Length: 634
Image (cartoon, rainbow, N blue to C red; front, side, top):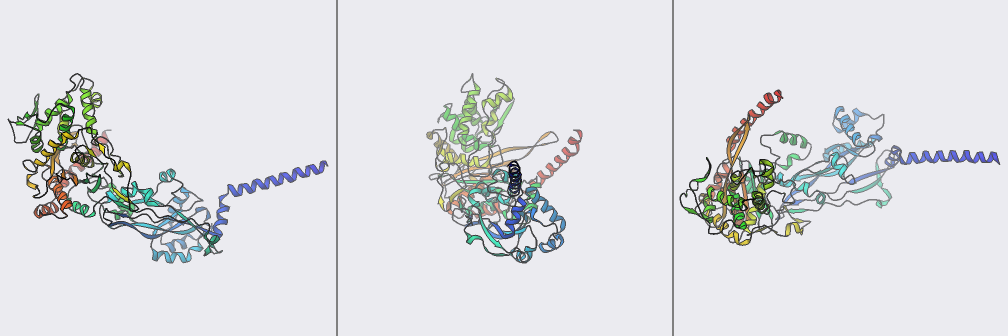
């Protein structure tokens, strides 16, 4: 009995060891699982068709074309693998082979990853015939983006290979070699455009050749294509606005004030999204990144921050009216500017020594008028200037400034709208006053905004106190969007009654002000010019560069259909470049044609390249100085 007991213990021990070993092989030694599974069954990941992109009128902008890729599971590669023969078959050298294999191993020895992307249909046909000889390698089919237009990369964006960060963030979907939206709509609507992956299982013979579906396709998971999206962009208007940016840097933003739909979003220099597609993608991308002079990948409509200059005077006046420090009858006499101490903000309105009211001040852009209004705003609470600035700041921010607009664009900047607390920290409590920050009154000083924020301000003025969040997508899968963030109006902190005189003054810009030379003969437009000061630091000195040309506009005055902001870098006066461009864009949209052909031709055939070349030389000299003198001293 005792001997039998020992035998049972021995038998149980051997059995336990076998069970543990079997458990280890099945659970921890994935190589055996993969070998067994991949010997007889091929698992094909089906990458879904990415959704197409259309403009508001259903003009096709982006669709897909098929490509093939080689995938590899590193642990399955045979030790007797003929590297030279394989390299000759797929058309690469040994260095590329080992580089790509190391990349795959770094991702995972056991999971499939892309070894060789972007294989044409013709080349793949040759490879496929002999691929069964090379254990560990397989193929997959995916779609590649095909952009039907050669511009608007800032809107459409582009796709690129996922990073380890992307995989870690969403490992249940992405794996090495997958593509993801890197910019524009491709990025902000990635989850809608990408669809859902599927899986097909195939039976293979001992040579690795497919001989049929596995289990009558019962285990297959169907891929679901991504949803199509239709943008709010009007392609004809977008193309027209891009032509007007010939040899100019800056941005054009056009919005429908009635619903916040972005009609045009032009950032110049203009990029072709097709440069980021295919085998040359990384090469072109690196070239654009290295261009630190033009910064072509920088979206100037949503990321660039500029002093708003004179268009901001409208907000100064609206804040003054809302805070009750001025009224519709308030006038100021301008003596060629606003004088404080030994300094002066010069005024070029041409009306001096006479009382100036709101409408005229807006029309002729009187610096003294708005400086006086701002001084009253800040000094509303004489013993607490911080409170006055904070009240002004809150009103300004209600127009969408100083914060993200929380739209559906992939990029954005908050800009700066300072508060009283900001100045307390900068200067110290009770060590500043209205004169210290008087430049804010005319849109200079610490204030900076983005072109899309300026356009949004115009929408709020056109609507007399409210706006809709600007957005770029109109329909998803051909169904109109219903997101309340875009369909619900946002109210500013200025009452409706205060806007009428402002709008009257903006219309007079085209009658007696700076917009006379590019006035439309048959469309009532309301606008405001701006000339933003611009400086660069060279050798520790601030050097003045040509000013930025700015203009805002909405039209028609009686029934606003479009609100526009234009910023032309180093363009000088607002009436030189930005104003004519804004008026042409408005006319093109409202009438679908332009009568002012001479003005149109001038804008489309002349630019600022000489100015930009001169600035580029200055920047290069400054960079050289910093690199060779400042850095060496450090």
